[in-house]
Image 1 (cartoon, rainbow, N blue to C red):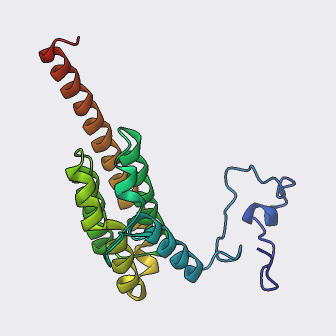
Image 2: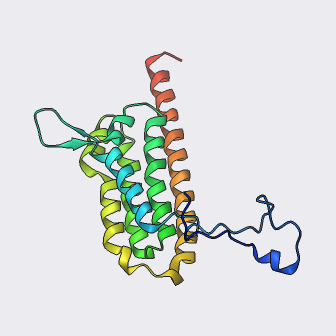
Length: 193
């Protein structure tokens, strides 16, 4: 985006006479998203859109109930739930970048973990995904706590989030491995292996 209020960022090393100040691949270069035109309101609008598509994009014919891509993706074995969980984790990452308090991030993480865990069950999990709507819940939490965000806590929240995403990733890998092992056991019991 080109905005008249945007000014080119000058790396701190440029004031020290470093001739490589224009090198975008420098490891110590800092990206200032605010000056690049990525505002908080734009981020909130993007998260609302992601939540809408995941949880409420389609109306169930003959009802006023809406479902999104999350339960539909869950019908695809293996990659569907992982994709939906990754998109849910994206909302968490953006919330941390906005500086949402740690307690709110923990609640949002709980919603994602519950959605990923129960949602991974065949068919029952897809019905749960359609009813629970973790992404819509998380965006509502984000909007409610957004004004309470503390810039001082943003760095701690980011560390918390990175650890939480690592735990979710390990949980999903373990869940996938357990599913494969159970399937192999069942196939062995039936005599297909």
